Amino acid sequence: MKNRLGITGLLALILVIAACVPTPNLRNEKLLNDDFLVSPPENCDAPCWRGITPGVTEWAEAITILEDDSTLNDPQVQNLEDGQPAVGALWKMIDGEDCCQMVSEDGETVSFIVLQLSPNHTLGELIEARGEPAYVIGSPGVEDQALINILYPDSGLIVGVFVAGEQAGSLSASSEIVVAYLLTPDRMDLIVNTSNLYGWKGYGPFNIYAPEATEADFIVTPSITLTAPPPA
Image (cartoon, rainbow, N blue to C red; front, side):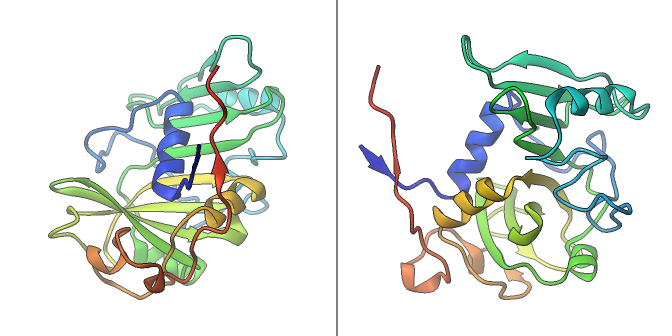
């Protein structure tokens, strides 16, 4: 059986693999408070975060970095599947709520990082710091919560921006950033090559980036068909 796995499905899969269910309230001050998207530290821009770069940093080194960070609780580490090398870590800020996940698919090198963020920075700040994104696509949520995904492929970065639902929600300069995905180049390429994506159309209602549209509306459509593994 073959199926195309777009960005919504792949990002959902990332979260499942990372063994963390996203908080029901996407706007949560107890999640990670970090300025790295709008004011990256010297020598550690995305997809680097606090000295950890997916595809580069060894797993053991990354765990040590997290353990030595006085702003974070020690990570909870566990194997993701019996008999497989994949390993994940979950952590939070001191006095915060579970926010952040990291996975190594081979057990040796960090594969990706998912950071759920407190809503302290805006899309306007992001664009001022990084320029307009290459691609955009919406992810429907519940009645009063949805995400619009902002993609910077050259930086291995996907940013989730909060809008107040797919019906009433609208994207503006003041829309809050609530999640960031830091990816290796090959994983970013996979997302781009298996997704329907819009180019940047500017600010406006959720429906200008809604995932349901004809192929003619997108500037990128899937060029790779993923094949599901045969049943055991």
